[in-house]
Length: 212
Image (cartoon, rainbow, N blue to C red; front, side, top):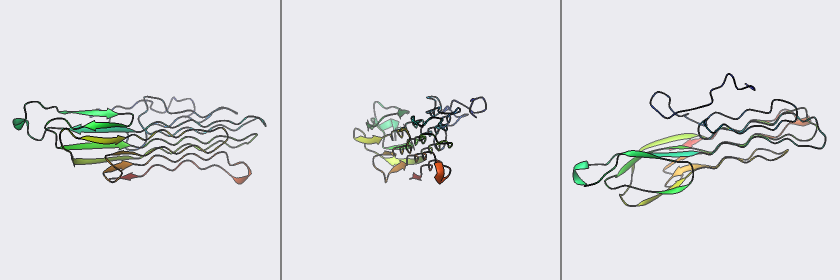
């Protein structure tokens, strides 16, 4: 959908419009000769793959695939027993960057959702009739009832978007996890292949894999 008229461009995490269970909406591929691929729109959800670069009409210029979208981590929690604490919070926190989360008073278990970073689209080498492959979307994973201790800090890692390169394969998206990779993790998406040239059509990036 090169003109963007037949593809949704936003997502919401409310009850009626859940976030994507996997990478968000991917970026558009290059539409005209020599055009670079596009990164996903900022409202398209976490972990979308970048679009591949269009074929190149030039013998001196390399086109660039679109970069992927960053991953995301959402932590939701409810106090274990409101009657035993004087101050407590029920809620959620959304992380778009890596950080340390501190468990609030009264919270002894959390639910965590993670999205891996999206892979970048493949670029295009000089004077090739083939476009680059699109980047793979990051994985989605969820784990409930993870034990935590109030007042303790816990590692939150948000996978970065895959980076694009002129005339090269797209970069791989980073993995996202909470505490460590064995607790709950979502792999980043694979990078799209550069144009195939005489070797054939390029491959799109592999989608990330979930691990809970």
